Length: 84
Image (cartoon, rainbow, N blue to C red):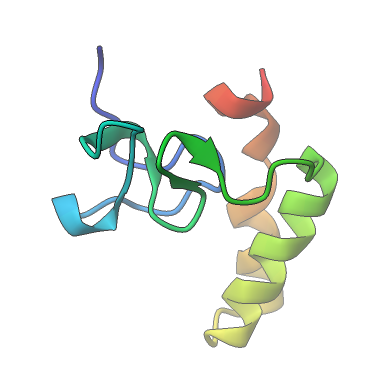
């Protein structure tokens, strides 16, 4: 299976192994970050792609990313593996 460089749920860059979520067997996920995926399950199970876009955009703004850049960051979120 392919090892992704960004989370296939929220699009967060995955720079090192510590950023990766975990599978049920505690192996590191190849697709998802630690914020979206733990022990083989999504941390936000019932979130819609639109709600995830708002959540990620708000987090980016909270971290000091300008609004227009935060909007650009989430515009293709629906193309990620979780949302296909």
